[in-house]
Length: 407
Image (cartoon, rainbow, N blue to C red):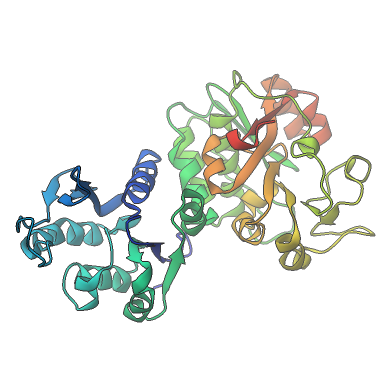
Protein backbone atom coordinates (compact mmCIF):
# COMPACT_ATOMS: atom_id res chain seq x y z
CA UNK A 1 0.00 0.00 0.00
CA UNK A 2 1.31 3.45 -0.89
CA UNK A 3 2.12 5.71 2.08
CA UNK A 4 1.92 9.40 1.10
CA UNK A 5 3.49 10.56 4.36
CA UNK A 6 6.81 8.70 4.16
CA UNK A 7 9.56 8.43 1.55
CA UNK A 8 9.68 5.50 -0.81
CA UNK A 9 12.15 2.84 0.37
CA UNK A 10 15.55 2.78 -1.29
CA UNK A 11 18.51 0.44 -1.54
CA UNK A 12 22.03 1.84 -1.45
CA UNK A 13 25.44 0.21 -1.76
CA UNK A 14 28.76 1.90 -0.97
CA UNK A 15 31.24 0.66 -3.58
CA UNK A 16 34.80 0.23 -2.36
CA UNK A 17 38.14 -0.89 -3.72
CA UNK A 18 40.34 -3.62 -2.16
CA UNK A 19 41.81 -2.61 1.16
CA UNK A 20 39.55 0.44 1.49
CA UNK A 21 36.45 -0.91 3.19
CA UNK A 22 34.02 1.87 4.21
CA UNK A 23 33.27 0.40 7.63
CA UNK A 24 33.97 3.59 9.57
CA UNK A 25 31.97 5.69 7.08
CA UNK A 26 28.94 3.44 7.31
CA UNK A 27 29.09 3.27 11.11
CA UNK A 28 29.48 7.06 11.42
CA UNK A 29 26.52 7.68 9.12
CA UNK A 30 24.33 5.27 11.09
CA UNK A 31 25.38 6.89 14.36
CA UNK A 32 24.61 10.38 13.07
CA UNK A 33 21.12 9.34 11.99
CA UNK A 34 20.54 7.79 15.41
CA UNK A 35 21.64 11.01 17.11
CA UNK A 36 19.06 12.87 15.02
CA UNK A 37 16.28 10.59 16.22
CA UNK A 38 15.97 8.15 13.31
CA UNK A 39 15.54 4.46 14.08
CA UNK A 40 18.52 2.60 12.63
CA UNK A 41 18.96 -1.16 12.88
CA UNK A 42 21.15 -3.91 11.49
CA UNK A 43 24.85 -4.54 11.89
CA UNK A 44 28.06 -2.74 10.96
CA UNK A 45 31.48 -4.35 10.80
CA UNK A 46 34.80 -3.51 12.39
CA UNK A 47 37.90 -5.26 11.01
CA UNK A 48 41.06 -5.31 13.08
CA UNK A 49 44.56 -5.87 11.73
CA UNK A 50 47.83 -6.87 13.30
CA UNK A 51 51.20 -5.16 12.89
CA UNK A 52 51.88 -7.36 9.85
CA UNK A 53 48.69 -6.19 8.11
CA UNK A 54 46.85 -9.48 8.59
CA UNK A 55 43.29 -9.57 9.86
CA UNK A 56 43.12 -10.41 13.54
CA UNK A 57 39.36 -10.11 14.04
CA UNK A 58 36.10 -9.19 12.32
CA UNK A 59 33.35 -7.96 14.59
CA UNK A 60 29.73 -7.01 14.00
CA UNK A 61 28.00 -4.40 16.14
CA UNK A 62 24.22 -4.60 16.52
CA UNK A 63 23.04 -1.02 15.95
CA UNK A 64 19.91 -1.68 17.98
CA UNK A 65 21.50 -2.91 21.20
CA UNK A 66 25.20 -2.14 20.81
CA UNK A 67 26.07 -5.82 21.35
CA UNK A 68 29.20 -7.07 19.58
CA UNK A 69 29.79 -10.40 17.91
CA UNK A 70 32.98 -11.83 16.41
CA UNK A 71 32.52 -13.38 12.95
CA UNK A 72 36.11 -14.48 12.31
CA UNK A 73 37.25 -18.06 12.62
CA UNK A 74 40.69 -18.52 14.12
CA UNK A 75 42.27 -20.76 11.47
CA UNK A 76 45.95 -20.10 12.05
CA UNK A 77 48.39 -17.97 10.08
CA UNK A 78 49.04 -20.62 7.44
CA UNK A 79 45.42 -21.32 6.53
CA UNK A 80 44.03 -20.21 3.16
CA UNK A 81 40.42 -21.06 4.00
CA UNK A 82 37.80 -18.35 4.32
CA UNK A 83 38.01 -16.86 7.80
CA UNK A 84 34.35 -15.86 7.93
CA UNK A 85 32.48 -17.71 10.68
CA UNK A 86 29.10 -18.93 9.33
CA UNK A 87 27.85 -19.55 12.87
CA UNK A 88 28.62 -15.95 13.83
CA UNK A 89 26.73 -14.65 10.80
CA UNK A 90 23.79 -16.89 11.61
CA UNK A 91 23.71 -15.41 15.10
CA UNK A 92 23.80 -11.90 13.64
CA UNK A 93 20.66 -12.57 11.61
CA UNK A 94 18.44 -12.42 14.71
CA UNK A 95 18.86 -8.68 15.44
CA UNK A 96 18.65 -7.96 11.71
CA UNK A 97 15.33 -9.79 11.43
CA UNK A 98 14.12 -7.96 14.51
CA UNK A 99 15.00 -4.58 12.96
CA UNK A 100 13.11 -5.50 9.78
CA UNK A 101 10.05 -6.50 11.81
CA UNK A 102 10.22 -3.15 13.62
CA UNK A 103 10.37 -1.39 10.24
CA UNK A 104 13.33 0.78 11.16
CA UNK A 105 13.99 3.96 9.22
CA UNK A 106 17.23 2.46 7.88
CA UNK A 107 18.68 -1.04 7.94
CA UNK A 108 22.48 -1.17 7.73
CA UNK A 109 24.16 -4.45 6.76
CA UNK A 110 27.92 -4.66 6.74
CA UNK A 111 28.41 -5.80 3.15
CA UNK A 112 27.34 -7.86 0.17
CA UNK A 113 30.06 -10.44 -0.46
CA UNK A 114 30.60 -13.85 -2.02
CA UNK A 115 28.55 -15.44 0.77
CA UNK A 116 25.50 -13.32 -0.09
CA UNK A 117 26.00 -13.88 -3.82
CA UNK A 118 25.66 -17.62 -3.23
CA UNK A 119 22.59 -17.14 -1.03
CA UNK A 120 24.36 -17.51 2.30
CA UNK A 121 25.47 -14.92 4.85
CA UNK A 122 22.81 -12.24 5.26
CA UNK A 123 21.35 -12.65 1.76
CA UNK A 124 17.94 -13.71 3.06
CA UNK A 125 17.79 -10.68 5.35
CA UNK A 126 18.71 -8.32 2.52
CA UNK A 127 15.94 -9.74 0.36
CA UNK A 128 13.49 -9.58 3.25
CA UNK A 129 14.24 -5.89 3.81
CA UNK A 130 13.72 -5.11 0.13
CA UNK A 131 10.52 -7.15 0.05
CA UNK A 132 9.14 -5.41 3.16
CA UNK A 133 10.06 -1.92 1.95
CA UNK A 134 12.69 -1.19 4.59
CA UNK A 135 15.44 1.18 3.33
CA UNK A 136 18.73 -0.72 3.12
CA UNK A 137 22.34 0.46 3.11
CA UNK A 138 25.27 -1.91 2.62
CA UNK A 139 28.73 -2.01 1.05
CA UNK A 140 29.84 -3.85 -2.09
CA UNK A 141 33.36 -4.58 -3.39
CA UNK A 142 33.95 -2.92 -6.76
CA UNK A 143 34.53 -6.33 -8.35
CA UNK A 144 31.04 -7.46 -7.34
CA UNK A 145 28.91 -4.53 -8.55
CA UNK A 146 27.37 -6.57 -11.37
CA UNK A 147 26.56 -9.37 -8.92
CA UNK A 148 24.91 -6.84 -6.61
CA UNK A 149 22.82 -5.39 -9.41
CA UNK A 150 21.69 -8.86 -10.38
CA UNK A 151 20.90 -9.69 -6.74
CA UNK A 152 18.74 -6.57 -6.33
CA UNK A 153 17.12 -6.78 -9.74
CA UNK A 154 18.61 -3.41 -10.64
CA UNK A 155 17.01 -1.65 -7.67
CA UNK A 156 20.29 -0.93 -5.93
CA UNK A 157 21.80 2.54 -6.12
CA UNK A 158 25.59 2.67 -6.39
CA UNK A 159 27.22 5.16 -3.99
CA UNK A 160 30.78 6.49 -3.79
CA UNK A 161 32.44 6.15 -0.38
CA UNK A 162 31.94 9.68 0.96
CA UNK A 163 29.63 11.29 3.50
CA UNK A 164 28.00 13.79 1.11
CA UNK A 165 26.99 10.96 -1.23
CA UNK A 166 25.31 9.10 1.63
CA UNK A 167 23.31 12.17 2.57
CA UNK A 168 22.24 12.74 -1.05
CA UNK A 169 21.08 9.12 -1.16
CA UNK A 170 19.24 9.51 2.16
CA UNK A 171 17.49 12.39 0.45
CA UNK A 172 16.11 15.84 1.20
CA UNK A 173 12.66 14.25 1.57
CA UNK A 174 13.84 13.09 5.01
CA UNK A 175 14.75 16.57 6.22
CA UNK A 176 11.16 17.20 7.36
CA UNK A 177 11.29 14.39 9.90
CA UNK A 178 14.81 15.44 10.82
CA UNK A 179 13.66 18.97 11.67
CA UNK A 180 10.62 17.75 13.61
CA UNK A 181 12.69 15.26 15.61
CA UNK A 182 14.91 18.09 16.79
CA UNK A 183 11.99 20.05 18.29
CA UNK A 184 11.77 19.50 22.04
CA UNK A 185 10.14 20.96 25.10
CA UNK A 186 7.82 23.87 25.62
CA UNK A 187 4.27 24.80 24.74
CA UNK A 188 2.99 27.11 22.04
CA UNK A 189 2.08 30.34 23.82
CA UNK A 190 0.35 31.88 20.84
CA UNK A 191 -0.67 30.82 17.32
CA UNK A 192 -1.87 33.31 14.71
CA UNK A 193 -2.97 32.24 11.21
CA UNK A 194 -3.03 35.39 9.10
CA UNK A 195 -3.84 36.12 5.49
CA UNK A 196 -0.20 35.94 4.39
CA UNK A 197 1.76 34.54 7.30
CA UNK A 198 1.32 32.08 10.13
CA UNK A 199 3.03 32.66 13.48
CA UNK A 200 3.75 30.33 16.39
CA UNK A 201 5.27 31.68 19.58
CA UNK A 202 7.14 29.27 21.82
CA UNK A 203 8.94 29.80 25.12
CA UNK A 204 12.25 30.72 23.48
CA UNK A 205 11.40 32.02 20.02
CA UNK A 206 8.82 32.89 17.40
CA UNK A 207 8.44 31.03 14.11
CA UNK A 208 6.91 32.16 10.83
CA UNK A 209 5.65 30.30 7.77
CA UNK A 210 3.66 31.34 4.73
CA UNK A 211 -0.08 30.75 5.01
CA UNK A 212 -1.59 28.73 2.14
CA UNK A 213 -3.00 31.05 -0.48
CA UNK A 214 -6.72 31.66 -0.33
CA UNK A 215 -8.61 29.63 -2.90
CA UNK A 216 -5.99 26.90 -3.15
CA UNK A 217 -6.82 23.26 -2.46
CA UNK A 218 -7.13 22.55 1.24
CA UNK A 219 -7.08 26.19 2.35
CA UNK A 220 -10.08 26.57 4.64
CA UNK A 221 -11.32 28.19 7.85
CA UNK A 222 -9.52 26.71 10.85
CA UNK A 223 -10.88 25.48 14.15
CA UNK A 224 -7.97 26.79 16.20
CA UNK A 225 -7.08 25.18 19.51
CA UNK A 226 -3.36 25.20 18.74
CA UNK A 227 -2.18 27.49 21.52
CA UNK A 228 -1.15 25.62 24.64
CA UNK A 229 -0.14 22.46 22.81
CA UNK A 230 3.48 21.21 22.73
CA UNK A 231 5.63 22.68 19.98
CA UNK A 232 6.74 19.18 19.02
CA UNK A 233 3.12 18.13 18.51
CA UNK A 234 2.34 21.14 16.32
CA UNK A 235 5.59 20.63 14.39
CA UNK A 236 4.31 17.22 13.30
CA UNK A 237 1.81 18.98 11.06
CA UNK A 238 4.56 19.52 8.48
CA UNK A 239 4.71 15.75 7.99
CA UNK A 240 1.15 15.62 6.68
CA UNK A 241 -0.67 16.99 3.67
CA UNK A 242 -3.14 19.37 5.31
CA UNK A 243 -1.79 22.74 4.07
CA UNK A 244 -2.92 24.78 7.09
CA UNK A 245 -1.58 22.24 9.60
CA UNK A 246 1.66 22.17 7.56
CA UNK A 247 2.01 25.95 7.82
CA UNK A 248 1.41 25.83 11.57
CA UNK A 249 3.85 22.91 11.78
CA UNK A 250 6.57 24.82 9.94
CA UNK A 251 6.05 27.87 12.11
CA UNK A 252 6.31 25.65 15.20
CA UNK A 253 9.57 24.18 13.88
CA UNK A 254 10.90 27.70 13.41
CA UNK A 255 9.72 28.75 16.88
CA UNK A 256 12.11 26.12 18.21
CA UNK A 257 15.15 26.82 16.01
CA UNK A 258 14.88 30.58 15.41
CA UNK A 259 15.42 31.39 19.07
CA UNK A 260 15.60 34.90 20.46
CA UNK A 261 19.21 34.31 21.57
CA UNK A 262 20.43 32.65 18.36
CA UNK A 263 23.89 33.82 17.38
CA UNK A 264 24.09 34.32 13.62
CA UNK A 265 25.55 36.61 11.01
CA UNK A 266 23.49 39.67 10.07
CA UNK A 267 23.17 39.71 6.29
CA UNK A 268 20.62 39.95 3.50
CA UNK A 269 19.64 36.51 2.22
CA UNK A 270 20.16 37.55 -1.38
CA UNK A 271 23.83 38.24 -0.60
CA UNK A 272 24.54 35.17 1.51
CA UNK A 273 26.27 33.19 -1.30
CA UNK A 274 27.54 36.15 -3.31
CA UNK A 275 27.03 36.34 -7.08
CA UNK A 276 27.82 33.96 -9.90
CA UNK A 277 27.29 33.76 -13.65
CA UNK A 278 25.06 30.68 -13.36
CA UNK A 279 22.81 31.75 -10.52
CA UNK A 280 19.17 30.68 -10.27
CA UNK A 281 16.68 32.09 -7.77
CA UNK A 282 13.48 30.23 -6.95
CA UNK A 283 11.02 32.87 -5.76
CA UNK A 284 10.57 36.46 -6.91
CA UNK A 285 12.04 38.24 -3.89
CA UNK A 286 11.55 42.03 -3.61
CA UNK A 287 14.49 44.00 -4.98
CA UNK A 288 15.91 40.97 -6.71
CA UNK A 289 16.54 42.60 -10.09
CA UNK A 290 18.63 45.36 -8.53
CA UNK A 291 20.50 43.16 -6.09
CA UNK A 292 21.22 40.17 -8.35
CA UNK A 293 21.07 41.40 -11.95
CA UNK A 294 21.40 38.59 -14.47
CA UNK A 295 20.11 35.84 -12.18
CA UNK A 296 17.51 33.51 -13.70
CA UNK A 297 14.33 33.81 -11.64
CA UNK A 298 11.73 31.06 -11.32
CA UNK A 299 8.31 31.84 -9.87
CA UNK A 300 4.87 30.24 -9.81
CA UNK A 301 3.49 33.51 -11.24
CA UNK A 302 6.38 34.74 -13.38
CA UNK A 303 6.64 38.37 -14.37
CA UNK A 304 8.18 39.51 -17.62
CA UNK A 305 11.68 38.06 -17.99
CA UNK A 306 11.09 35.38 -15.34
CA UNK A 307 10.54 31.65 -15.76
CA UNK A 308 7.59 29.44 -14.75
CA UNK A 309 7.93 26.70 -12.12
CA UNK A 310 8.31 24.03 -14.82
CA UNK A 311 11.62 25.61 -15.91
CA UNK A 312 13.29 24.37 -12.72
CA UNK A 313 13.95 20.97 -14.29
CA UNK A 314 16.00 22.63 -17.02
CA UNK A 315 17.67 25.52 -15.16
CA UNK A 316 18.69 24.09 -11.78
CA UNK A 317 20.94 21.27 -13.09
CA UNK A 318 22.97 23.94 -14.95
CA UNK A 319 23.31 26.30 -11.98
CA UNK A 320 26.32 26.72 -9.72
CA UNK A 321 24.49 28.87 -7.14
CA UNK A 322 20.82 28.54 -6.19
CA UNK A 323 18.69 30.59 -3.80
CA UNK A 324 15.40 28.92 -2.86
CA UNK A 325 12.49 30.53 -1.05
CA UNK A 326 11.60 28.84 2.25
CA UNK A 327 7.98 28.71 1.04
CA UNK A 328 9.01 25.53 -0.81
CA UNK A 329 9.29 23.79 2.57
CA UNK A 330 5.58 24.20 3.22
CA UNK A 331 4.40 23.37 -0.31
CA UNK A 332 6.65 20.27 -0.37
CA UNK A 333 8.57 21.18 -3.53
CA UNK A 334 11.93 21.63 -1.76
CA UNK A 335 13.11 17.98 -2.00
CA UNK A 336 12.60 17.96 -5.78
CA UNK A 337 14.40 21.28 -6.17
CA UNK A 338 17.30 20.11 -4.00
CA UNK A 339 17.63 17.01 -6.15
CA UNK A 340 17.82 19.12 -9.29
CA UNK A 341 20.41 21.45 -7.75
CA UNK A 342 22.65 18.77 -6.24
CA UNK A 343 25.74 20.14 -8.04
CA UNK A 344 25.17 23.73 -6.88
CA UNK A 345 25.67 25.69 -3.69
CA UNK A 346 22.19 26.14 -2.28
CA UNK A 347 20.81 28.73 0.14
CA UNK A 348 17.38 28.59 1.75
CA UNK A 349 16.08 32.15 2.10
CA UNK A 350 13.06 33.95 3.56
CA UNK A 351 11.16 34.65 6.80
CA UNK A 352 10.07 30.99 6.98
CA UNK A 353 13.61 29.57 6.92
CA UNK A 354 14.41 27.25 9.85
CA UNK A 355 17.79 28.31 11.22
CA UNK A 356 18.88 24.76 12.00
CA UNK A 357 22.31 23.34 11.23
CA UNK A 358 20.61 19.97 10.69
CA UNK A 359 19.90 21.14 7.13
CA UNK A 360 23.57 21.41 6.18
CA UNK A 361 23.91 17.64 5.83
CA UNK A 362 21.23 17.65 3.11
CA UNK A 363 23.24 19.90 0.81
CA UNK A 364 22.18 23.35 2.04
CA UNK A 365 25.19 25.67 2.17
CA UNK A 366 23.51 28.67 3.81
CA UNK A 367 20.36 29.58 5.72
CA UNK A 368 18.94 33.09 5.82
CA UNK A 369 15.88 33.81 7.92
CA UNK A 370 14.51 36.02 10.68
CA UNK A 371 14.74 36.10 14.45
CA UNK A 372 11.76 37.95 15.92
CA UNK A 373 12.59 40.80 18.29
CA UNK A 374 9.03 42.01 19.08
CA UNK A 375 6.61 39.09 19.39
CA UNK A 376 3.55 41.22 20.18
CA UNK A 377 4.08 43.49 17.18
CA UNK A 378 4.65 40.48 14.91
CA UNK A 379 1.41 38.89 16.14
CA UNK A 380 -0.52 42.08 15.31
CA UNK A 381 1.14 42.35 11.89
CA UNK A 382 0.36 38.73 11.02
CA UNK A 383 -3.26 39.09 12.19
CA UNK A 384 -3.67 42.24 10.07
CA UNK A 385 -2.40 40.52 6.92
CA UNK A 386 1.03 42.17 6.83
CA UNK A 387 3.67 41.14 4.33
CA UNK A 388 7.32 40.15 4.53
CA UNK A 389 8.56 43.75 4.50
CA UNK A 390 6.31 44.59 7.46
CA UNK A 391 7.68 41.62 9.40
CA UNK A 392 11.32 42.38 8.72
CA UNK A 393 11.06 45.65 10.62
CA UNK A 394 10.16 43.66 13.72
CA UNK A 395 12.94 41.09 13.39
CA UNK A 396 16.67 40.81 12.90
CA UNK A 397 18.13 39.12 9.84
CA UNK A 398 20.08 35.99 10.66
CA UNK A 399 22.30 33.86 8.43
CA UNK A 400 24.03 30.56 9.14
CA UNK A 401 26.76 29.23 6.87
CA UNK A 402 27.85 25.62 6.57
CA UNK A 403 31.35 25.50 8.10
CA UNK A 404 33.13 24.72 4.83
CA UNK A 405 31.29 27.64 3.17
CA UNK A 406 32.11 30.15 5.90
CA UNK A 407 33.92 33.10 4.40
